[in-house]
Image (cartoon, rainbow, N blue to C red; front, side, top):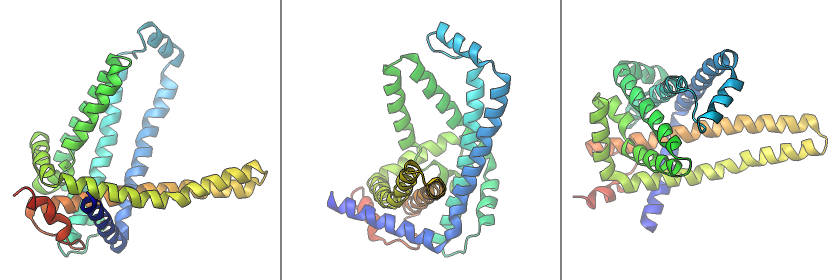
Length: 286
């Protein structure tokens, strides 16, 4: 147990080292976030003007909380756009991370070019992800209490099964069904290191979140004392810091994902990592 925990911090430190060396990799989650905002805006503005929300609420009250039928295709379209943006940018980041692991000098253009080359696979996986997302919502609405927990369990299981799907799509160019099967095989080899690494990164990010939280607390206290300008400035700084924290979190987890994939698939130690960080997982399965 203690060995796993120690290894998790070691993997987190190595992932941080890769990001520190290639700081421009953080732009992939930043671009993803900006595109996500555009997607949300493209749905919110039309819906806010075209839908009679009083009638919508009335329909939900008459049908035991269930929305009109048109909501489901709209929800599917929204899920698809969001997943497509996230998968595309994560694929670009994975491609750059793998280039760095293999001694190359990755550029942002290299990552986006690789993602564009995998556009059919990304499109297909976004369709599958959106379909699963809508199904989970239907399961949740099927029963007021039980549905929520069933959806939660199924969603967690799906997330685990598809852990390695993005790097599989980038490197192996498989379809969605084969990608899920391949992801499960690779995860069985590295589940301990994947969990430990995520926990290690989570602890590091928790420490980094402390100053972000302090900015919001200080801003709120200043506003409460009547220092409007200083309070607003700290709150704005807190928002910027929170967005940066989210970008760092996404980048670190994706770098770790790429590193675990490379060793699980090819038995090659990624540059910036140490063989001892991975070999324990495989020794126990040989």
